[in-house]
Structures are given as C-alpha cells and as structure tokens.
Length: 497
Image 1 (cartoon, helix red, strand yellow):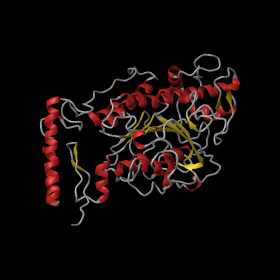
Image 2 (cartoon, rainbow, N blue to C red):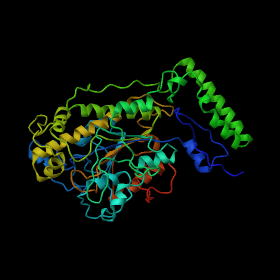
Image 3 (cartoon, one colour):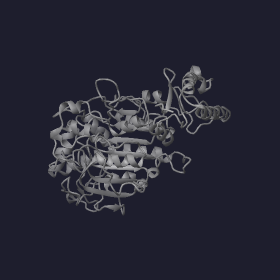
Image 4 (spheres, rainbow, N blue to C red):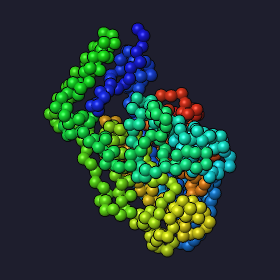
C-alpha cells in the first residue's frame, strides 16, 4: 500500500484542540519516527550586551583585579570562562557564580563563532551578528547580502519546531522590547527567531512583548480537571474526541484494517484517561494560574526586570507542561538604553567592586553599548565594573529559568524538567568586544540528551555555531541531514553522538 503522508497531529481549527496520533502503518518512516520521539524541550536566552569577559582575579583588591585579555585568546580569562578546560573545579568565574548550585548541570563551550570563515572576526554590523547567531547560515560576513539578512533561514528553535510539525510561529518567542534595528549589510538586531514556513514575505517570527498575553495564549482556556491541552470553556464538558471526530473519520477512511484497530484502541485509551482525570481532578501540571509580576509593576524603570522575570516564569510553565516546549527570549535589544537601565542594574546587581560596595552606576550615560563594549576595554576600572554589574543582571534571568525548571517535580524518567530540557544562553558578540569569534556560550540541563555537564568544553578556534547546533540536533534525535548546510559532529559535548 502506498504510504500516506499524514501529519502527526490532527487539528480542529478555531477550537484550539489537538491530539497526538499513534504510530500507524500509513505513516511515512519520517513521520513515524517523529510520532514516537516527542518534541524535545529547548529554551534560549540571548544576552544582548554580551558580557565582560576580560581577565578577573577576585583575590586582588585593587585595579589589578581586572587585567587585559584579548577576546579571541582563551588564555588568561577569568570573568566568564574558567582558565582551563575540563571539569569545573574551585570557585566558578564571577559571572557564573549565581549558578553555583547548578555547576553539575551546565557547561561552558568556548571558541564558537557566527562566522567561522572570517579570520579577523571584527564586525561593525551588530544586527547581522544577531541574525546569524541561531541560524548559523553564513561563513563570512563579507559574503552576506542585505536580502539574505532581511529574511534569514530557520533558526535552531524553528528548525526543531518544523521537524516536529508545530504550526509556524506558534512557539514561544518573547522580548521585553518590541524594537528592531538594522545596520551594515542588514539583519535584525531585535530578533533571533526565523521560520521559512511562515507563509508571508518575511521569515521573522513575531515576538510577544507582554508576558500576560503569552500566558493567556498558552493557558488562558485551560481549567483544572480538564486536560493539560487548553480547551475553550464552552466545550469543557465535552470529550476532546468529540471535538476532532470529523478529522478522525477522515483518517479512518484512508487507512487499512490494522491501522483502524490501532486507532480504536488508542481512542478508547483517551476516553479512559479522561474519566480518570475527571475523577481525580489532577493532571501532570494542572492548569497553572498566572504568576505574579516580581516585583509588582508600579510604572518605574524597574518594571523592565519584573516583565523579564515573568516571561521566564511563563516559559518554564510552557516547557514543563509540554504545552509549548520550545522558547526563545531576548531581555532587551542590544543597542540603546538610557538612565533608567542603569537604575535597574544598580538596584538588582549584587556585584561588589574593589571599593567594597555595590557598583554606583553613572546615570548620565545613555548609550549602554558605548560605555560597556567600547569603554570597558580602555582599562577604566569604573567602566569595567559597570559592565560586570550589567552582566550579572543578565545572568539573573538565566538563573531564574534554572531555578524554575530545576525545582519542579521529577518526571517519569526520574529527571527534573531542567535535566529533560536544553537551555542555551549567550550572545552574538564576543566577550566584551566587537568580535564574533569565541562567543560567550552556556548550555545547561541536557542530562536526558547526554550533555557532558559541569565542564568547560574548549573547541578548536573558529568552530562554527552551525556544527554545534547540528551536534545538538543529533543528540536530541531531531531528524535532518544538516542544519543550514552544517553537518559536522563535534566531539566532547554530548555522549553517544
């Protein structure tokens, strides 16, 4: 019998309901593999202003604590990467200190680059670097045309979503900033997610800038005791099968006798599960209530931090419940900012400078990028300490995601949602420079996928992000012969790959 190319999910438009089909003979081999694998969980947090990555020696109490180190050079670093490769030992670098409780659940990967074919690695075009960060489709910045960067190919999050049949644009893509910018050969400085299957003139995946709207999209129609799949309130008293029987009938008419037997058995299991759910009024995640802003919004410049925290909380709920296991977040657009930004940093950062006090930031400066990535490399301790304080604030969002996923109950395989997910955090600019080589890059969780945790994994110089992503896809069992033309397996990151 000729294989019938059916989708893994059957959708009822307008009702927001979907069920997973069992593996059937009528499925093509690729669809059958997708049906049994389950979509992996992936969360990405982009650090828009990169991080201060110069030398740092906490044992010293004067300006010599901060010593020069070129970003492409792996020797002598201390603020982000451990000085040596291998297992984490002793105190973690200053930027990673907030994650000390998770030191065995994440690794740092060094020497990755967005443009592996550019030996100089110096860029004046920030927006193209941002666009290249998760797409890894380009070898040299000089080869990139404005048309390419205005409509980049699939980013790694969208590649995974497409492989598992998600509706294009349905994954979590969020940012506290709605802005965008472009310079040089083009690119989108305000976006990191792109999907070529959106079906419009742009591959840019729209980002949600209101965490409450994101929560309502994911959970707003869910009520305790129904199922973990949101069902419109008008249909809460119906079986989920009542809502999709028309589509099920179409499937039954196109498959053979054995497949129909499998379908009948599968549908009966759903009915039995619904009875059990209605009796116990419990589900794996239940239907969560909207987390509160932390702190409560009051119209001040500190609201930005509260909004980002709530975004992280909603991301964690979506991932742990499998309502939406794929998410990307940009706390801020790279270029810009003002005095209110420094107020946030000063209020929330716990970094103490050589004077023994929390950093007192300069509220007269309104160009964050200039004061950090440029001035911090001129040997001015004041700017360096401001940059470290800013980095610490960015890392608090990463820590919050670890906290949320790591504190949730263990799942059937014995792991927490953190270990059953992969968390990526980093920047498209190097450690405090205009380089796009040796990018700051953290990968966390991943126990389910064989991640070598608790390590500084030093790759060869100019290792392309695309090869890293391809290796990660293989570990996550995501189908595909390459990722945007990249198909090299990197050793030492995952076991069994």
